[in-house]
Image (cartoon, rainbow, N blue to C red):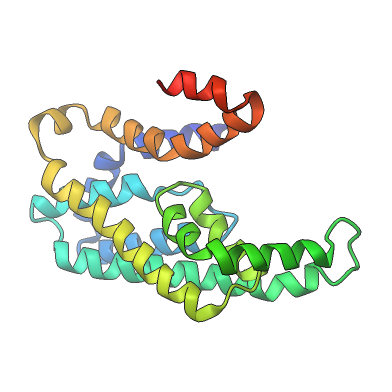
Length: 219
């Protein structure tokens, strides 16, 4: 459980850790951020890495002049698009083999249903998933398993990736250094994580307790 405590400490004190990284590695900070965003979106086993909060923190340092906002947006946008692309092709490679009929509970009809879903709803799924931690790591992988038409995937991947990076990076750039935000940076990061996780939490509660009870809670 020690690694969980370390992860939470890193997430809630991103400003301190990022400040140290910038002071220690200088220009190489861009490469470090690129790798983190790429891995967070590119491998289905690493959804725990920071995404939204890291972009926000990086944007706030860009406002101070420690990082270039244009380079930050361009490099991290590319990292997000590349990560989803790699994740898609991993799923595309694994899918046909996993659903070949050798595993009893992985039936071909499930693969066909997944394909139909992503052909019909895949675009908005890929875009919306960008803004939901954990889900954004699984969405491109499942799209690959379901063999979503690649030109559709890459189009929505680009739109979603650039929108996600732009929203959180420039939010950090314009709001990250406001006195209230700087004074309560840990709380702001926690709220970003919490708000990002609300959609899947609400959907889980709806499935568990029924729509009416959850809607009462939302009101």
